Length: 190
Image 1 (tube, one colour):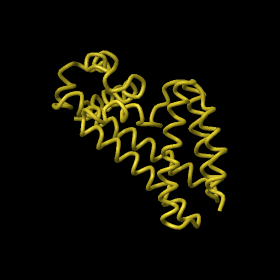
Image 2 (cartoon, one colour):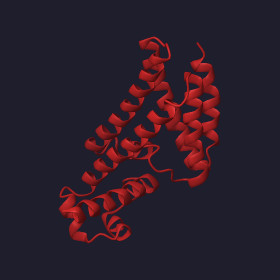
Image 3 (tube, helix red, strand yellow):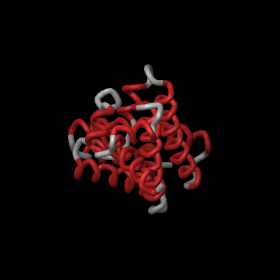
Image 4 (cartoon, one colour):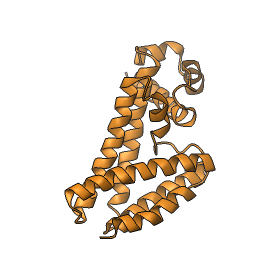
């Protein structure tokens, strides 16, 4: 039983990396099979509904990585400005080190690519964005922001980070993220 779990995890990690690097449409089952080293039959055993099922589980994996990193980083500092600066600079450093493929940091590419064609994937991406917004709003409320303002800022910060991640992928560096971290200081100054 342990081997099956390991094979499924290997397939999922490989697929997640590929989806983040190439998008959903640019990643095929044969490539996932080849790069994961898994037998073709194990793909269909673990994911009987095929590529879309793999993508939904990959998005869940991205969500877990993203939320764990955000929760950890945002808990490290005592003010909203310091915490978000720290968090965003950490994301920027990943782009500096990994270039155009920073795993677990953004579902923007897959969301953009599949929103109008795959409802299950759109829903999965929507939940990631909403979870981020909720986490940011919750932390902002803890730092004294009123609920309505915190919720608006949660959406704004999510949009800024996702946009800066897209630019960082394109530029192959974290500079766009550092720029939004600087601008967030103005938004978060009470």
